Length: 213
Image (cartoon, rainbow, N blue to C red; front, side):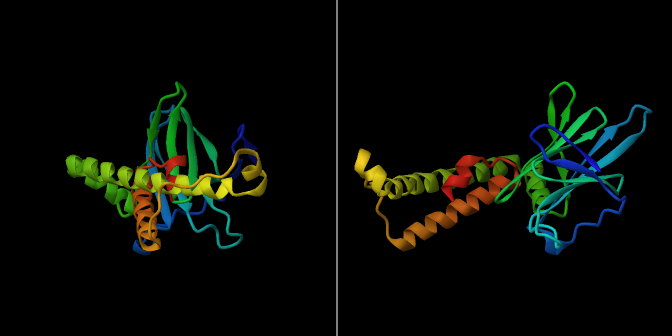
């Protein structure tokens, strides 16, 4: 049984199974984020979202699981939102990780869930907290890598599309002004992937990142 929220997926009731602790070999394959929220009776509960990016072993589907105080309450395909005290938790993914994992208050304000300290997202958050200047520099570099990748990829995509016969006959063809050796193209593509990965760790990636790499 479950309930569907608007454009989001069906949220199903969990079986209460315990939350498994984060392991070092899951560094790049699992996202584990938590927020503690007050309840009407004055107590507080820990809400944890668990996402295995390689998908479930049964069917390969990537799902978000919501644990409350360490017990599975509900799960869903993504994008989804889980109802909680005072609002809901929104979860979404892209090709490189989470693009959204926020608690949205009833008044519309939003707050990111905190990553598990052992995860790569947690380590990136710790770097930002301890060395904000270095963190900002890394953020600028990663964004630059993505934009460089975009400047190379987009003209090549337009050129390829323009050579499709119906398009070429109606508006002509386009020749990309960017002509680079294959090795340079590969290096730029790799750099864009690195930049996109770093931005995904901070949930800053967007359609630009998808296009650039």
